[in-house]
Length: 360
Ligand SMILES: [Zn+2]
Image (cartoon, rainbow, N blue to C red; front, side, top):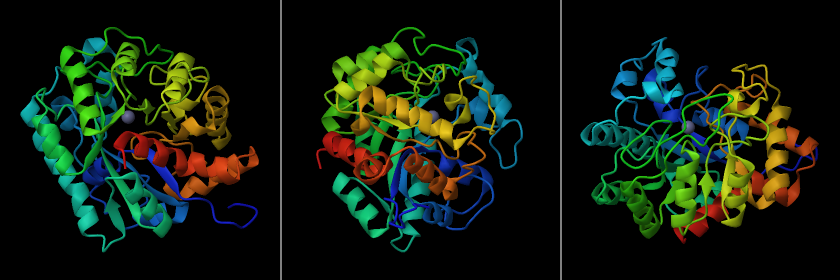
């Protein structure tokens, strides 16, 4: 895509729900599919070198709508749009058995890949994968529900390769409260971390596991900012100034991310990109670059990356899926991002923040 014929730097991405899509549809990560957004052939075609693979545990009331071909999943997800309809926090044993299964499926992909896919545990490993064209998988919990307050399960999941934990999805658990999906809506939706949540931040810091702030409400964000000794990271959130979705980051939050040496990853979901918040795929790729421009202008080129939400959100039709990423790279080129700044946006900043967080 690049007009000067030099290959684009590989892309490392802050968020996908691909394993959930694979479980729901029964498709294989190794075969090119028409549904969903990421598989290995489309990743290769689009220059996607790897990303955060979310382990997301569906609430029991939603899980029964997740059977292959189920049409009412979207309707079931509406319970997360209003705190008054949020489900009760799920039982620990339920979350843990689901997490073991989903993590196992991700590890099976690595095992079956003949060296084409690697689960990464250090920034050095990640950089080596990007340099050599090995697809890098970072294991991430989107919600800390599988973790107990005493920190025992964290050790087990760490040993299995988990290196990033979002405290909660857009719901509550024993640690924190998320933001309900609202547009327009403020991320400031009530109290922050519980005592168990504060203890979890300290456990994650000690273990040097990344803490993800996307989905967390604003008080929780500031609690983590005060307690954590790691860079502040929002893996898949946009600029609230351009799209007043509760899931996006206010200017003050963006500033705190910069001051901590952290990063915000651009979410490709049309509802978090658009000024009107509409779930319309008729949203130009240029709108994605508008958010990049805004965030780079506000907090600097060192603190912005990508966090697609592939397989978990509605993509702009122009982009479509991972194979469409060269369209985004072309739009970044056209807006003046080339050379080192482009490399930073596409993967360099993620590698740096992971190194600073993990220590290697
Ligand atoms: Zn998410």
